[in-house]
Image (cartoon, rainbow, N blue to C red):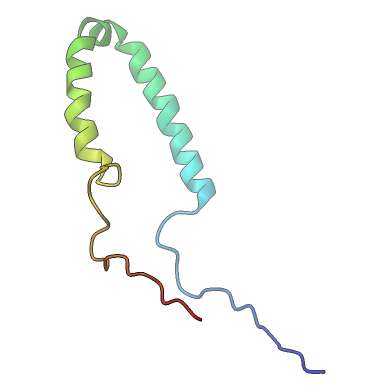
Length: 87
């Protein structure tokens, strides 16, 4: 009886960014800081909410990316070819 031997070798090299706990901690610090910033400047924000809403539209288009457009096909791919049928 033959057996195959599979070695699990972890990927070598550094990660491309901070680890998940660090990202979570930074997100929490940003949320708490944003809350206190909004709390201290609520009078300014409440008086200009219409302008902030209008500013949100171009910012969403700028930072959203291109993944949500409906009519575009995937870039750099071949058109779908019919699969060869086996008799």
